[in-house]
Image (tube, rainbow, N blue to C red; front, top):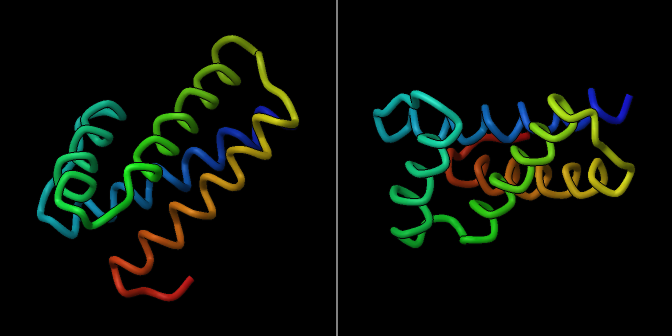
Length: 99
């Protein structure tokens, strides 16, 4: 169950990051490219805090670990919940949408 929760939380961050990229007129080719684009277009431009990019990366790593190595924990899931919440709130502010 924790592996599924971790996966779903990473999907929520991924899709929020994807929406940010679409807002700028771009489309990603991979998780790595999406992170690089968010870094360049939002963090480096001062539109999003570096912490959010780092949280995106950490949550993607937790998902990969849970999905492919069957290594997951309550602590990892809790971290993913907080990372996703903070990222979604900030993305919604940037995109001017209500959660």
